[in-house]
Image (cartoon, rainbow, N blue to C red; front, side, top):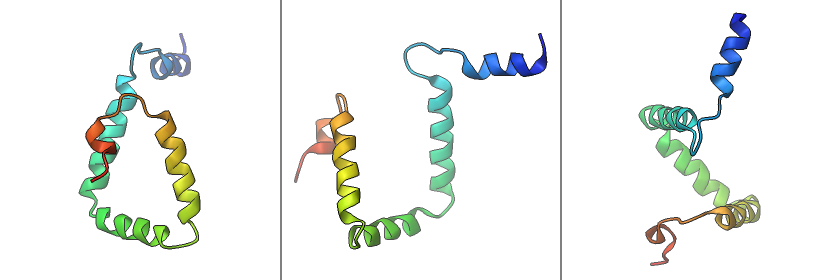
Length: 80
């Protein structure tokens, strides 16, 4: 079997319920971002976006995302 095909099979295999490889990659990327020192900067950018003409578009995207959530922790969606 050539090396390209072997690599393709390794990266595209079905991992069953949940994708542990994708979860690990996501978690590693989130960790790198948290360590990057850019969290506060991105939070300020998000706040500015919510005060701009992007607000309605962001609210629509949020509503779409909320329609797709499944069994989310009620504490996350609870209004104070």
